[in-house]
Image 1: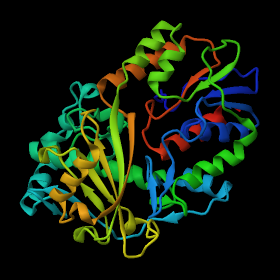
Image 2: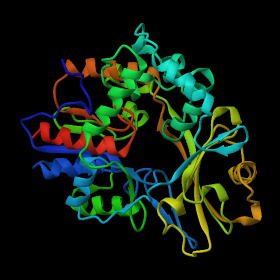
Image 3: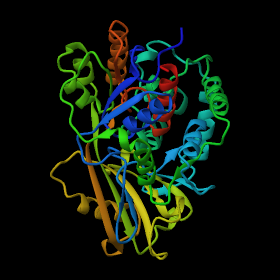
Length: 419
């Protein structure tokens, strides 16, 4: 039997009226696809703006994204852009990716003698015992070794999941059944799946005025369907899709104790996105996508995106440069501006005097933690929803995919299957 994916729950087929709570990226996208498929959609948002965490601040020196800087594409993403008639900008090709290793920016992230370790490790058999409980570190350590799995893989995944590999749950990221008995076979199957999953070449895209263009275009399509009103109680006789984070969903469903309790087990990273505009370039980030930083560096910064290399038009003055830092917000009393000044000096030759502008956005519930607790909570929730009446649905990046790309694909499939 195929494993359930995507939104939790199912709409009541007797009604085409759907109430969506939350006009973040999940609510807007599922609202768009449901409306396209003939549903009467009402989207309720308690804030004065839509888009949730996604948005773009236009500063006097350039653009600053409040969260995601781009959308990683597949066929569904590109089809949506065509439907919206939304022009997009592709990320520059051939950009290098750096990892901070031994106090310097390095590419490729491995040493050549480690390649032989990987080759030898590839012939090892996969240990399937307790695989549903394994972290990414548990799974890949036999192949890649302790250091590479703990530090380099944590750095590579940290910009997406904001956690080390010892925390990130393996089956939450690598969802397909493992058919091979060896690591080489597993990697080969991953490559084949990637090639077959999309006809188009995957790339990162953004927009002339940043991610705000995407939000504004969705808002335009749904203008008559959006109501800035807080919903505090759920009517069981309506089709309801809750598109808030898990914490807010738990509060909304407090009368459904089992569901609320499982939602409450899902935790979030507290993060700060910081865009800095400088009058001097970080040399190694010229024609580079960015830098990822492993846990061993003992820095709060998880990584840096080289905005002006990726999307060229992110500053107003051609002699300026734009970078975005993703920073852990684990100390509420810390001065983020001082932290950035200090850490940017560690990882580059920039001085505070080189920084023209800093735009910080703090999110207490930034990114859901994709750990074993979240995985088990979602499994339990799916079993609870199987035994419930139709009409209640949960949807968001804490359920089955953290990226905007996955949200688009799941929303499209959900709307089609419920039509």
